[in-house]
Length: 513
Ligand code: ADP
Image 1 (cartoon, rainbow, N blue to C red):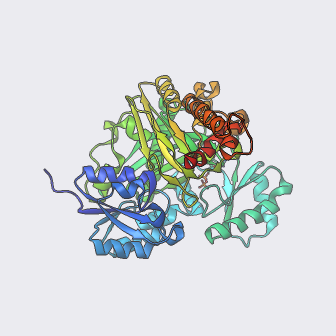
Image 2 (cartoon, helix red, strand yellow):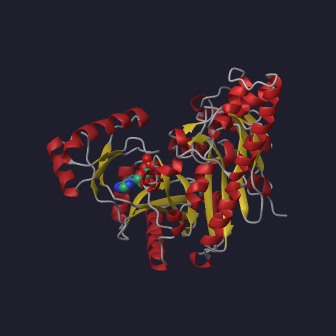
């Protein structure tokens, strides 16, 4: 057996991504070290790890974002590399720099690349210079006279977007439909950007109507090899955040795929990119595509790429970080079949996606051929307000899109999850929707189909809830000496008209047993 590339890798993250990254680390004969806040001491990622760093507190700012404390503890444990996952410290250039200074390998690109790509204005300028198409727009400093900004906006044309240079998660973004709205939107976006990122710089960008969000997985090694691992279609979004991703994109033919792939590689080379990254594009209805941004980390939706190119992206990240070359060339890479990912969130689509909290009373993911579940919870786990409400990702593979859709619809209908509001039925309604099935989607698909957010349930939830209602009803009947009262707390749960509230009420119900 070969000597492991590292001795101990710290996964500076939590939840499903920490679990997923640790599996590959351990498979490679390397010890996995976890971080755990007070709330996560018995979490799934903590149980998966070989060693643990306890970070007292619960809030991210007190725990998973404590870069100096984490690094100090990592050094004490003899950690020789850090995998940052996504979110938290993954795009923090100062943290990557501190790791290097401490003699610990940061599994990601160089700190300077992270810094530059975190600034949408710098990134866009660099791409423009490299000949990668960018969305027409204007950027200048905040002191620019407003009459000049107005002229620039008129030249771009309305509608347009005001975006924050340091933006992320849709923050500091404003849609301006007409010239009258520009001044207020500009000021509001700058204020929001200042408070969210401590950086008020904003820029203007033409608003592309009914676009698709298409991104390319890129990879570079330290010998100058750069490849792309094809696209991911991420147009199904709520509040500018992705919930369903798939590859190949139904919108790309081979010619467009090749041109976008080449643009992604050109972008990566212009940055001197190493390790895994994602180049995001927006694809207009007329087939024109534009650079949007680069994410300098592993992406949430990376499994659909893994399922179709048959590569473990985390293994590749670790190999490249250890100084090994990429084990393939562009010509070796082929897309095989079709993969779809659904993000399972503890949130209520019928109540404006309000996050759900509580105990996962029932949690039985579906199993079957070509079904993968990347999860960070188990039955009995407590879902709290402190962290991202994503519980797991359900990923399926089929030999073509039709087969993958059929499998996803079945898998969602067999996912038993009770105790916390969730979006399973919502995801199934999208997957089964004729427009989604036809592949004719864009980033406003959900807004244009509000019916999808109506209260509903999956077949297995219906079965479970039916069984639950019947047993609870007979119990309540016994408790109330044959009278079905609305005042008893058990009866209250039974007569709630909505299955969603019953789902939320399961926790109360089990407590009473
Ligand atoms: P953030 O980094 O805040 O997530 P992005 O620039 O990645 O912001 O954009 C997030 C989403 O907003 C995109 O996926 C797309 O749906 C929408 N969007 C961004 N720029 C444009 C644009 N110029 N025209 C239309 N939609 C856009």
